[in-house]
Image (cartoon, rainbow, N blue to C red):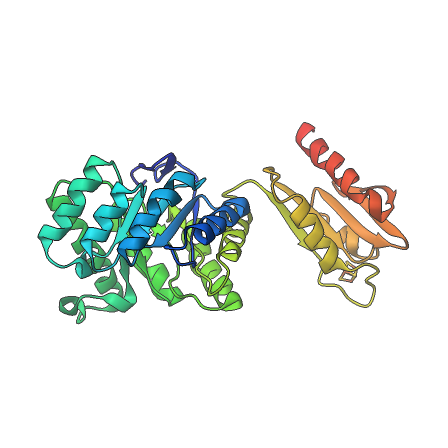
Length: 344
Ligand code: SF4
């Protein structure tokens, strides 16, 4: 089991549940847009948010951003150690650095001094794209893990153990192997993700394959599904991945693929129902099916199901037909049965 660490009020590692992380893609200097995006991410279920801090203006903006953000803010730093120090002083709850590109050990020591003072953890992130020269001759997985551990040892040399590690690759198999390996070598919490996973479909598929496997094996304390585009989609996908692996409570929507027998717009109804009950924290499956012919059989693994009929829906509960309801009644009826699942 990994060590527990605190990122402000969010506990990660140990027996804590897997935490969803995302990253803003607004200019951090633009405080208003960044805070708006953080709010959108939070509304979608994000629990930790990372922002890039490439300039002193961005570090300065953190003062307001960290004060007004509903979730802990992590500062992403490259190259300039002073930006890390400034970010911590301005309220960042964690910093992500790559000591390899910070420069000499003395500069890392300076960051550590302030991180200790403010009780802020540091994530050391090794990426397959930034392996130090001296490790390049090693096999890729060994190089990734060694690169992260080299950074960890440097922090430990200065008596710092408030550490999170990541060893990301843009390749699914490499990601799996690297995290499997490093999880056997350290007990620091692991932030897992496939880096530069791609546009929506690629990102979802690669992240689900790698993170699904790792989480099922009990590896990973925080996750990010990295998608090129709107980060809110990252959070929604991460939440669904955790629910589907039974690592988080929530409604799972089952929907048939539709066929010539379909009598309702399954995709539309499944999406509406999913949105309507997205905040419900109960492990319940709701099936949305296009017809009654095979529908009830196909949806028998769900606690609650609706199947399209002429002018409405047939509702079934734990495999038994309850009755037929008009479309406008369906939300209320579903709500009643969601409550009933819990009571029974
Ligand atoms: S539930 Fe009905 S509409 Fe949906 S795929 Fe099965 S047979 Fe077709």
